[in-house]
Image (tube, rainbow over all chains, first blue to last red; front, top):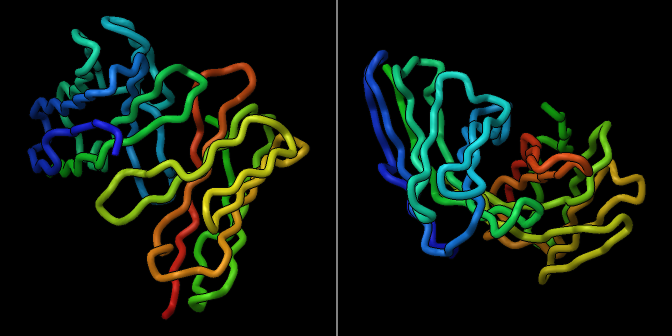
Length: 112
Length: 111
């Protein structure tokens, strides 16, 4: 298994509250990614990082922000959670942009 | 975003049978990946393809990079119960650095 740990694994929260998900890697990979997985949509990229403090938006970035202060940690924040952000969130890592991505086991987030 | 169409959406097969699934797009890709996802877990990389026409095997799994570069195929031979799961394709465009994912093929193997 690639050394990727997502926390928490499950979370239930209320609309309007802030939520932060954490991805921690022990592989020293340069690239880190956040995806959401919803039925009928597959995996969709939210944000990604190509180095410490270097991040960029993916195709579904509205309502999300990210930060990467250390190589090993990539945080995803929902500033004010909405019910449409109920989903399973996956972190992934890769050595470089053209290399295959390896995934964590996901965080199931429910927003009531 | 890019649309990757996976077919079929679901399959129910008898143990021992061979399986074929595919992934198609209207765009040209320079890399194709195949993943398997078990319930409650993240996708696990099965096979990576980098050249048009490339045929790569991983045990009983064989994947091909279509010569048009707009499609890819995954075959599983002599299926077993642990093959159950959802299989995803992913493609990377020639000019971009994002991988786009298909919506998956759900495989059920009947013992």
